[in-house]
Amino acid sequence: QSAACAAAQAAVAAAAAAVGRCRDEVRRLGGMDSRLRCRHTADLVRRHEELERTASRREEILRSIESIETRVREAKARHDLEGRLAEYDEARAALEAQRGSGWQALAGQVSVETLTATLEDHASGVLQRAQESFAAITRGRYRLLAEAADGGAVLRARDGESGRLHDLDELSSGTRLQLLLAARLAFLAEREGEGPMLPLILDEVLGNSDDERAGTIMDIVIAAARQGRQVICFTAQSDELGKWQGRLQAAGVPWARHWLPAGVAAPPAVPVAAPAWAPEPVPVPRPGEGAADYAKRLRVPPLDPFETLPGSIHLAWIVDDPGQLHALLAAGYRTWGALSLLLSLESGAAALRAGAPALTDLDRDRLTARAEMLQHLLALLRQGRRRRVSRAELRASGTVSARFLPEVEALLEASGGDGRELLRRLGEGAVRGFRRRQFDALEAWLDEHGCRDDRPTLSLDGLRAHLHARAAGYLVDGRLRLADVDNLVAQAAGCLAGLEADAPRGTE
Figure (cartoon, rainbow, N blue to C red):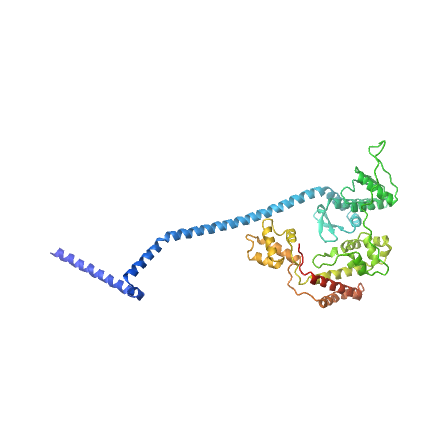
């Protein structure tokens, strides 16, 4: 009986505990939204079933999340791969360019080493003579320079028109041959000193030069012969022999032709070549014709603030005396770069004056001042004007690799050739995977070539004020006159009219 009583007590305690739990649950549910207590049982059953269906999709949602994360990782990997492929394309393009330049460097190695060794042995005298000869042969196009380097000197050639500095192995084979000829003449003159003249021996000297340069080389050699130097030329080309015969007959210097091997019974007849290398005659100024009218008749190219380089300025914009301009053009000097190079040499101006009576009064200082003022005018005209960029210029810039070039060209077209707009779109990721290094290179190229300029443009009055301020020093020391500045302002007015009529620049 006691056992039964104990069991009953335990059952009562368990029931009391269950009742307590039920009360706790009722109190908890009582704190929930009262709307649940107002809903019908059927509604609660349906809501319960919906929640169970949602819970059953948990695995499906987790699998979808995992799939999305996998695709994100794969996309990132593809992006990295595209970047690596772009770097590979850039490296391959650079390697191909180096391979091409390597062959050219190999071709010029012998002549470069010969010139370097010759001029280093007799640096001061030979270099000066070689500079003068080389400038004369190239009509002032190139100037030979020697720069100090470890263990000796490095020879380079500066382009008189573009101002670019070239290593000797970058020059064409014909120009290297001309330089070699200038160095030989300089070397001979230096070694001879006050002694007898040594013979000059040449082999196929005209082989790599066009007709105009071949005529110039022959004139240099003939001038050396007139000074009493013996010249021996070897050639196996009948057309080259014909050129020599025609030039020598016109020059009136004594010469003889010999066939090798000696003792040939009847040498073949070689026709005298027509002087195809002779330049087209320059029109002579008419009596009373002014500089502007003479320049129009010569069809002098107009000034372009974006395209005209300092060295490529036509002399008609600088030389205001028609007689002097004609003499310079007839002597083969067309641009300021070529003329300024020759005038910078010690004997250049003297040689020009001796060669043409019209150049007796040639004022080097005044021409230099006029050229500097004209370059300043072009810089002022570029201010605030953004030059349009063409697809051809973009390709030639070399800033965009072949992999991205089609997309960047299309983006340039969509930007209307506006370099600033192109950079903005590239910065926003319009071309996927475009490398930062290429972006920086393109930005620098656009700035260098005047394609991004946010400064205000100058009116004609503004240009006049800037030009007068810049010319003050030249006016004080007498190198320029007020008429020179007025002429420059008139040129500025003409350039402004051209810019307004042709606002978009650089179209294909």
